[in-house]
Structure formats: C-alpha cells, structure tokens
Image 1 (cartoon, rainbow, N blue to C red):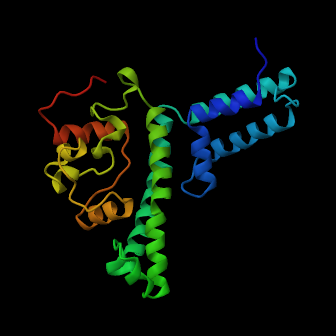
Image 2 (tube, rainbow, N blue to C red):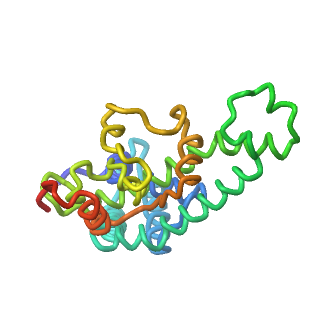
Length: 242
C-alpha cells in the first residue's frame, strides 16, 4: 500500500467538491453542517501535524485518522445527506442573497441596470455603492450555485452520472428558475442560442433584475424536485431514464 500524502488527500477533497464547499462556507456564502466543518478542521490538523518535508503522512495512526475523517466528510455530503445540505443550508443562503440583491436594486433605483457611468458618478454615495454591490453580486451567486451543483452531483443516481430526468441536468434553465416557461415562452430556443433572451446584455445583475421584476421563482431544487418540474413543463417529451 502506497504512503498517503497531504497533497494527494487535498487534491482528492478538491476533486470531490469538498474544498469548494468549505471555502464558500468560510467566506460566509452559506453554512454547512457542524459535523462537516469539524471533521474538515480535524483533517487539516492531522495533515499539518503529521506530514514530513515531502508531504507524506508519518505513521499508520495518522494515515488511519486521515482516512477515517475523509470517509466521514464524504459520507456527510452524499446521496440523501447532500439533499439535506441543499435544503437546510444552501436554500436559506439563496433567500438571504436574493433579499440583499432586491435591497440593492431598490437603493440603486433607475441606475440598477444602468451602463451610463457618467450619470452614476453624479448620484449620491448610497446609490453608487448599491450599484457596485450589484456589479459584484455575481461572485456570491456563482459560489452558491457551485455548491449546489456539487451537492447535486454527490447525490447522482441516474445513468452516466445524471442527477435528473431533465436532459439538460443541472445546467437546465429550469434548475435555476422554476417557472421560467411562464415568463419566457421561447425559453428552450433562447437556451440553445437560437433566440435572444428578453433581458439586455449578459451581465448577471441585469438578467436577475429582469427575472425578479417579472416574477421569477429562483430556486435550488433537489433532483426529485427538478424531475417534477421538468415533467410539469414537458409532459410529452422523452426524459432521461433515471
């Protein structure tokens, strides 16, 4: 049996999405179950305190401790438990994000989606700051969606790693906006680049302002919930076999 190394272990954590989840939690983007955070911290301590100058773990006790902690961490974000992370931790974070986004839209007023920087410079500081926060809002949203994608993949049970019967899987527009077909009749054509979306430009905050102003239900579904939503809007289409 080859000797375990801290680098290999950390690479494996990254490959399985654990590092991304932990980094987002450390930035305050969302929370995670205390058990995951505690075991992750213990694992880092084992790696830091028991590695030689080449990064190899020293002693079977350290290797066993690292292996046991890795197994606990992976098990805590797998299958049904991954869904619990989505429901109990990521969804509340999305609600907070959208509340803050709406508050910034309100504070920025007509300048929320403005590209006229000259006009913006003459506005009060609270308007300018709200606009800056809207421009920067993509980073937190992207981190949230990335954590959701990781949890969905770690709960994959379909063929070829599919997480849902929706042919577009986690990249489907219906996985982001539950009621998109009610808002954009030609959403499938737009998704595949054959028609333009109704909002102007590609900036995240411009797109999200349009969606929220038009009644979009932005969500983070489990695989089962996405199945049900896909079937609702595509009752006659052939689905991927789960």
